Image (cartoon, rainbow, N blue to C red):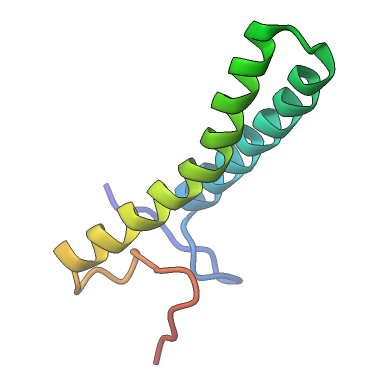
Length: 87
């Protein structure tokens, strides 16, 4: 089953949905950071550090995952590295 690309962009509908899910997860992590910072208990401090590390590491891990996919499948036009110039 092949996904159709929209005329106004280069991303498939699936890619856009996954991007919005990622944005929602990061916003939830930021909200979680705010709430945990305001609570102040020892357990909340531990959860706050875990949440802060996840906020930083998840995008980095996803970026390297995209790079590895691009190296494994160099001819696939659907895999785009952020900031990559296309001809």
